[in-house]
Image 1 (spheres, helix red, strand yellow):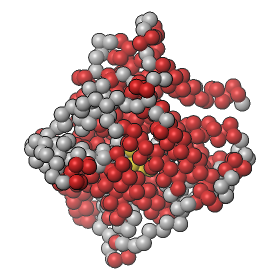
Image 2 (cartoon, one colour; image 1 turned 135 degrees about the vertical axis):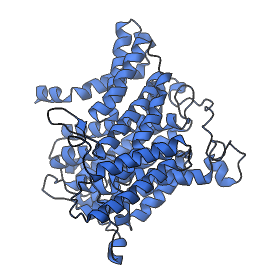
Image 3 (tube, rainbow, N blue to C red; image 1 turned 180 degrees about the vertical axis):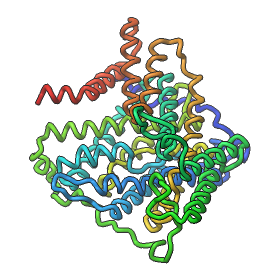
Length: 497
């Protein structure tokens, strides 16, 4: 493999969108130069605002991850506990975000990945003790780091055609919009249909809070009000608190999706030292992991690592592409200068997720909320990380923002990312059909990795049918075969079994 495919090509970045403060200025100090704040047309205040917006958009993970990881039973019937998982979820997110900000200098936040935590809780834990589960995650993170250091991960990123990278960004946007609509209860499973509008209609105060938050955010956004996303979240949260207080609802009588917006009462409910007893749990069974995994069979372990690796690998790539495109941080071919550092920090986050017993940590698509506020540098995830660190002490305040108040931002961000669809050449059958499959399969399968897989497979297949197989990068063929095997995992296991 030639050297040019061992790293992301470094070409001139497109001119970033002007920050709310105006045009780019010359660096004003060491921090400005290191993070390239002025160079990317941003300001320190804009970065702080972006970090706040990202934090509020993804703070739900501190509440939701414990409900998934903390309540699931391992092979021995043991559970981790909700308070303990909440503490390590916030801690791992804090350290990972700080690391991403300093190492990559890009506005990407990291935390326990949704979807990946479900795989861990319901696909891996039933087969082994929790200590072995987290050891497995550490091994997966080390493999990811090796793939980055050897240039393979960035080579895969560079091998994907620019048009498909744009399609991935658009697909991530639709995925985020759907996540926002579903989490708010605006879209729900239907009676006889896969999805429907609300619970047979837009019924209930939580839905009204979401609609109000969406309208306010849209109004602020189109009026170009600085901090539109963050202001939308704050205003909707205040309305939610008032609605809950006036209604006198208890035990979630109003039907909030997850978090009931109630102000904590009493000093004991406001702050407390986090329970970090789960940190380092991977070592409970000793460090001889070969012996620990022998009971369930190495073939099963390899398949579990491969499943986590594939999902983590392409979820990260898709999110990185989508957020970078939104912030004009990618070059004309869709590549990102310094992608290697981004992927190193992401791999380190996965390892930290295993060390801290918080599941697989990965780049969050909700980072787009901060980018929507104008964030363009690593200052934003540093701010997000600092708030996550505070969240270990102030969990009641973190869980105060309901889905219905935060998710309107994801819908707006979905729109912003959708606008890039005009840059896809749909007259090219391979690129057009591949892009189409990538875009629709992300929201329809609720998986960024699945969307990328179907998009790449379609692109390769159409190129082959049209006699243009030689125009497809060899790595694209390799990735397509890997995805094909992954999608056919169930029938393959049935044949082997």
